[in-house]
Image 1 (cartoon, rainbow, N blue to C red):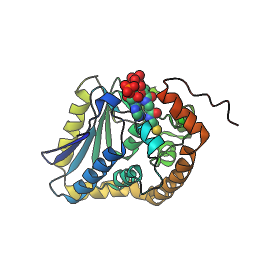
Image 2 (image 1 turned 90 degrees about the vertical axis):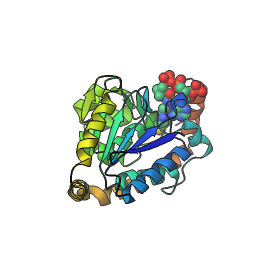
Image 3 (image 1 turned 30 degrees about the vertical axis):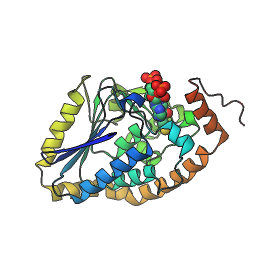
Length: 255
Ligand code: COA
């Protein structure tokens, strides 16, 4: 199983489990996470969702082979449905991250309520390096959360950045020592949340998000349209070829 689910003390844990590929997310993994989030929303036994990977990696983002062989075609694709599910989730979501947190491994955190990062976490929004653009509403949420200049730096340069920088920019709740500490901190917060009155928590989350909910849906629509188009571009084909050939892409051949 590449997504492991466990329900314990009202906390549903979703563990991304594909360590041999740095926990890259396949279509099937998105589908499993979407179903788990949707089921969690309906199940009164679940009060909190906790998402994590392995100590070595949270996730290296979308599987790049899938981008080549089964690219998303719209919001009804597995990744689109996952974005809808996580952005509409009514119950609190806590994340514990470490190692690679790349692409959607960073942007999904914008939909979480608490993010605990191991010191060794390497965040990256590498879309531009793949000739792609931000997804999961990050072109709206990122500048809103950390400011325009910081969002432009992370999205237009696409360089990896540390947990310390993520904390300074306001992308994570807390930085923890390497090893199991981030997961322990996430479990501790999830435990506290599971004892709170669920209806009040739900209303707080709804009120925090409602001022931009409509705008978010529209932005995700725009991002998806452009993303699907850019995925078909010759620049993206060069980026994916370069990744599989373990070399740097050469974009200078394109205007
Ligand atoms: N999709 C598919 N396979 C991936 C992957 C991804 N997103 N990320 C890593 N892998 C695979 C590698 O191809 C490699 O497979 P192999 O052993 O069969 O050759 C394996 O996972 C290990 O990855 P590797 O690149 O050797 O590890 P690393 O520690 O040197 O680098 C990363 C780790 C995350 C920096 C690097 O793998 C990377 O940049 N991945 C792509 C990230 C990305 O662009 N994601 C999409 C964002 S939209």
